[in-house]
Length: 439
Image 1 (cartoon, rainbow, N blue to C red):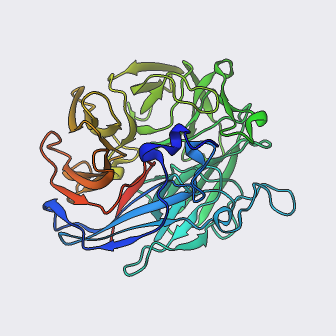
Image 2 (image 1 turned 120 degrees about the horizontal axis):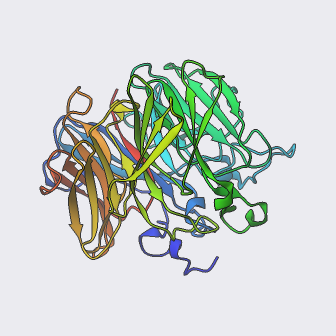
């Protein structure tokens, strides 16, 4: 891979090592209610090269906040078997080795475990106890019950505490399996879902009564397996949304055809009309290039599925070119007024947007030229779902070649940051993370 590959330049380039720095400087005032970790995962190839941005070894970057102080920053590679042994995709028996991947996409907490995720393998558990260094504890396969990869975008039901997720495969059918773990972390449901071909299924959604899958036209191409991302844009495959009742998890999946597109990330979903309509918001790419190249338009869209009539209404809601949508996760599956997403650049620099889905308006915090935010995670300020809170994001500054952790008031997005935590180095462009308050 040539050193000039775009995903190895600028703030996409990996950092060379792991560090720990304590007592960080702060501009503004960190809300004293915040005690915990802001963690974000992303690709950071430890050999300083990878065939695609999506394929670098996972590295978690964490800032520790305690009662108004920025206590520390640390970054740690996730010690998967691929990282420690250079393992291949198959084990000694020729089976796909689901421990041997990069765990580089997300970091979530469920049933007391902090999990680093990638959609092509098992999760890896991290040690986030106070006084520990984000060490990798080891692979987590739900006591041997999980037999497929796990999506990097599981959904926690705020009512039941259940974790809903899926795994998709590429070597043989079934290409899609739906899973559910209870609030204690025990895997209780694993059921295959029949789909006609192995597609790249990055995200899905949950409502109070349904699960919604996305079978979209980015299809596995074995001939590309050794050269990068082995997927091609195949609009003739068609695009559709699949709906499964949560109270009948082994029942029929109903499919609704939509216009060909691709969705990496959903904003949220909920039900209307006594459960007869499902509303799904997502960032829609009008197409992807072969090898998962980004060469299309992106913006916020809404799909409304009428379960009684068997129809779908598709609507573009905004024209900002944005990605990494988030909501207050305590409203997962429920009606929500606000959503958030990030824009990486442009003439006015990067921005974080707040969508008012009720009023159809957008407010934006613009960081200025050369300052690029990543995903913004919502951090609650009280116990009211949908109530006040903050947004946290790493923001890269090209002028200094360093990054900050920026805290914004989610209700006053155009105002200056509440706090800016100055980090000792840059945090490379990455994917997803969360605020994990101390339990």
